[in-house]
Image (cartoon, rainbow, N blue to C red; front, side):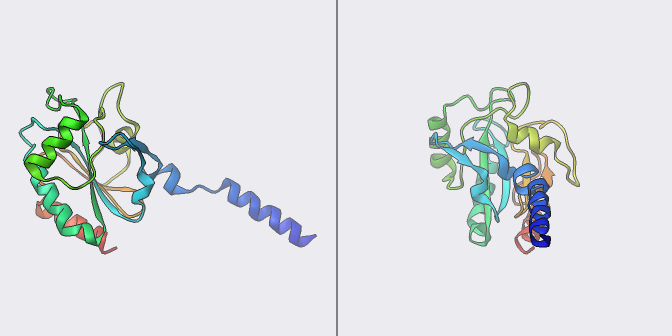
Length: 184
């Protein structure tokens, strides 16, 4: 009888426990990659992620080069850059997914994962970016101000830092934070 009671208590506890990887992390989101395939972000579990809203016709577009360099330098250590094209700012990402993919390959030899164009603000904001702009972090919350904002995600899927567009991918600030997360 005691064993059955204990089993019921343990089962009850497991049913009421909260799994942070599915409720409070980026891993709960699904999106579409640039080739049109549905992708669950839980495939990146255990990796450090740098999520960036991108655009092909922006003054910050040359940051693709720095992002690619970061990816090449740290991908073997567990860093994955995730690019999300968005046309929310000045119509600076007007192309189709195929045009964006071609632009990134031809101009910056991008090899990190790119995703289908999304909205990062407004009524049609993708749920991932709704989460990223409201998740607690030591930097700031709120609406994305422009293209190439960066969100650093730890190995557990939690937002640990956020950077505005003018912070370059290879800045000391970002490099130190990435290295810290990769080594934790």
